[in-house]
Image (cartoon, rainbow, N blue to C red; front, side):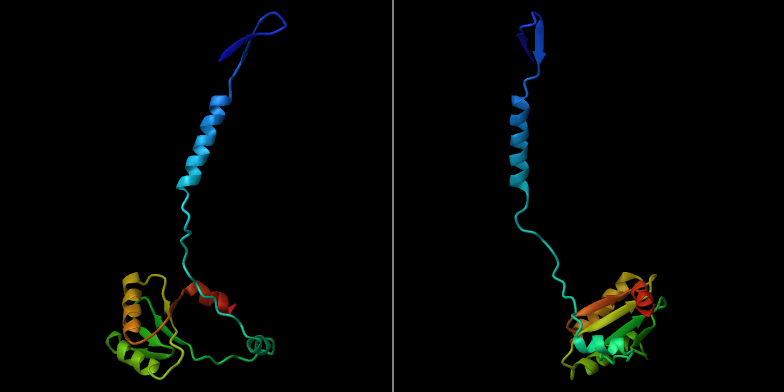
Length: 147
């Protein structure tokens, strides 16, 4: 704190802000230096809608796709699309399905209370059977799609 004598005759006290500005600039430089240069993110591919799908949707025509969905309920019962399958038969069935297909994508629909270890086991079996990309579908997404 500095004291100066003003023209009014009495002592005048002013705060010297120069050291505070110096500290602020040093902190600013430190935070700029420690900021990571590389931004880390996950690569996600979003499917694009074709014009044909839009036209069919406007005309209320159902689109038949060749999508494979493995459904798992809370009791670990498995279904490939609408066909029930046992866990030990899942690998050979998926290998049989995907060996002749060009589209190697698969989706897993699981119940809310399903342990994540079960889903990981199904993904592992699917990758071993030759499935390329695996997508996860939750019950909330299914409800939104049907509304």
